[in-house]
Image (cartoon, rainbow, N blue to C red; front, side):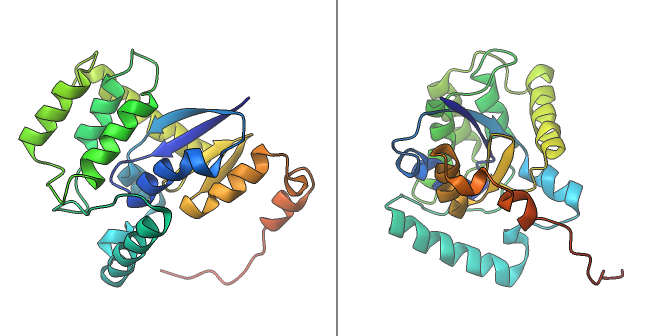
Length: 215
């Protein structure tokens, strides 16, 4: 049985779609998943980037594409009233549902995603809704406590150190697979596709120095 790390932030619709598709995409494979929350904004800040929803034309395309992808794979996806939004309360709540030093299980992670993407367009930052979700999940620790906050920072920093630059990212066998459309590659690696056993993986990413933009 191979161990996967699923790096996610519930602010990302692609992360929700990948989470929902994962069991079917990896059907027949032997694996275990560690669900690793991180702050997507922390990745963007580190790499000096804006999120897709922060660039007008890219935002429009993103929202159209995820709507099409959702209906294509049979997943529910309803845009929250505000997007992007601050996902910190959800990330911390998820971690607080697990004992110190451990990770949230799939049931908790699914509840976080569904709170955002399957709630009929409700506001993901609504205090009353967040309070109700917290009551439902019954966290073991204080989501606003220093311990949980430190764990989320550490998970984000560990993801950056591993080379994670976006969500969703699946990590398996020391390799990173980014995006919903990478799930077939994950399945291929788990099934022993010979492409992954040879030099192709490293050769494809060999440096090719080119023009560097100034300023």
